[in-house]
Image (cartoon, rainbow, N blue to C red; front, side):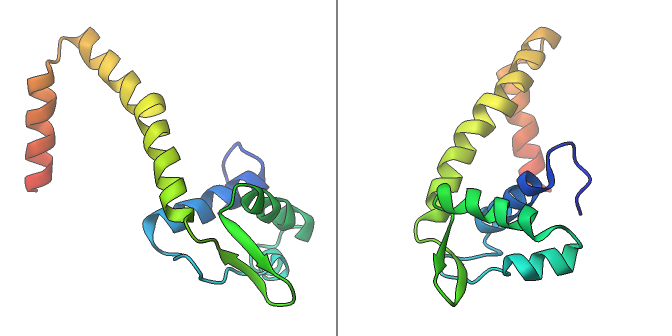
Length: 119
């Protein structure tokens, strides 16, 4: 599971965020404890705790004392909003610049998008 260049705690946080965005984790759902995470993925519990602390700081998770960690209300909306901004800035803008350099028109791009949607 953890094979990227980012630190493991970042990969854990990113995976949980992706699960919230995709609806695999819904607002109010309980997530695995740091101990469960550590045992399941054979990592240091402090690594899992660091990921969860980051998610709490980002208001993706909240802690119910003695019960566990849960997906926060509004987390999906917040994550999708920030994800949309990053998508356009970090991914789409460079693709559009490359398309422009290659002489690919907006009409060609839209035609390709529409053809892909029909598949």
